[in-house]
Image (tube, rainbow, N blue to C red; front, side, top):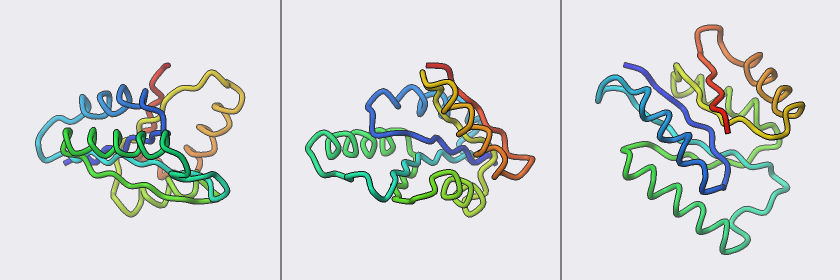
Amino acid sequence: MKNIMVCVTKQKTCERLISYGEQLKSSDEDSLLIIHVSKSDEKFLGNSKESDALKYLYNIAMERGANLIVLKSDNVKDTLARQVEENNIHKIIVGASDKKQIEGNFIKELKDNLAEEVELIVVPA
């Protein structure tokens, strides 16, 4: 049994990441977890676009038989790493960003927070 975690933003374009994670499932025993972590100072569902995006993510999760976790944290990388440990995650899916320098640091720091056996997969934009 594999546990796969897909890290998403509030953007509706995240469906490609969820589809990628779903393709990694090799049996019905494998589980898919979709997670969104926003910083504490960010508005969360403060406008209709955010609420629409959350409804969209929820519907996608239900269609795919996935669990959806939405959290707030000042340290996104540590929060993701803690969820990996708590949910016995084997593979993490993240999307590539246009901001290469920032993305590289985020991905490196996230990888540094993970156990060696956890595979971090960056899906190109």
